[in-house]
Amino acid sequence: MARTPAGSGTVGILLALGALGCGRLGFEQLPPDGGRIDGGSDAGARDAGMDAGVDGGRDAAVDAGPPPDAGPPTWEARPLCGFGTGAWTLTEPAPVTELNEAGATDLEPQLTADGLTMYLASDRGGRFAVYVSTRPDTSAPFSTPVPVDGLGAGDRNVYHFAPTSDGLGGLAAAAGVPGGTGRADIWIVERATTSDPFAFVSPAGTFNTAENEHDPWLSPDDLRVYFLSEGLPDGLGGQDLYMASRPAPGAAFDAVVHLTELDTVDDEDNPALTSDELHIVFGSDRPGGTGDKDLWIASRTSRTEPFGPAANLAPLNTAGRDAESHISPDGCELYLTREVAGGGVDIFRSRVIAR
Image (cartoon, rainbow, N blue to C red; front, side, top):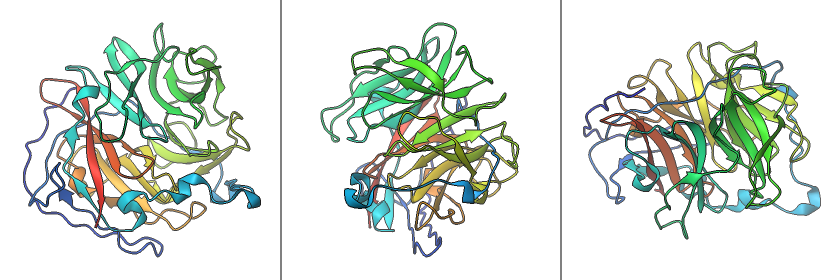
């Protein structure tokens, strides 16, 4: 799994993406302190997950939205840093040192809505399990990650955890759980209180197949999941991206939509969205990248519309494997993973700054 990272270089990059009237999405690389630089840096990353295909078209989506008298949901009111303006820059990715363990594979970063709790998957204990880390505010470092009770150990591997908004549930991608249908499935997990262990309750939906389903990204209202599948029948490649919806939090996901606009004959994985679901960053080894697997970005004007054409997120990509992205709920941080010298995979962070 280890790959020697590519050497860093300096290449000034400014990329514009026009999608469905979204206008200009500019992004260029900056150094960690936010100052402008002439170049980009490199490294590599590894994905523990897979991708998906599904039965049905975009007209199968179920998206009733909030009740008319509920007012705008809080996630739509967030500034989303530069993502909300349509013009933004990215700082040069820097390792989040406190989350990484030398020689281990640390990946699948997932922040809670307040930006203070980070879940990640790691094989530092032998098998893959979910770990959790916290910070007192978004400018402070994270604490040393500790295992999440119930999301690891035994004969199972738990690769990815997407928490619900109340912290009492979530979706876990895992292999070796009794009752599963494939090599890795997406499960609904729950706990009674935040001090109790999680329990695997049931498969997340009928989209689980005999192949791999992986990389769940859960919407802020807990009603939609974006994921990858290798087994759904209508995908073009080995790993493809899908969205499934459900009528209420805790229920199984039923209506499944193939994100055909993002699909190619190559692999797509690790969907990561802004909290308004208008921008998606994902991994793909399609042509037009910088090498191995790259991060790509696409946008849309409404979450009921298809995404526009995907563009290579050039400032973050290297000749190695760049994957496992996650956008903080406020849109101010973008996390990704890279393979590092000496073995292992580390979590990196880039700041998103409005221009």
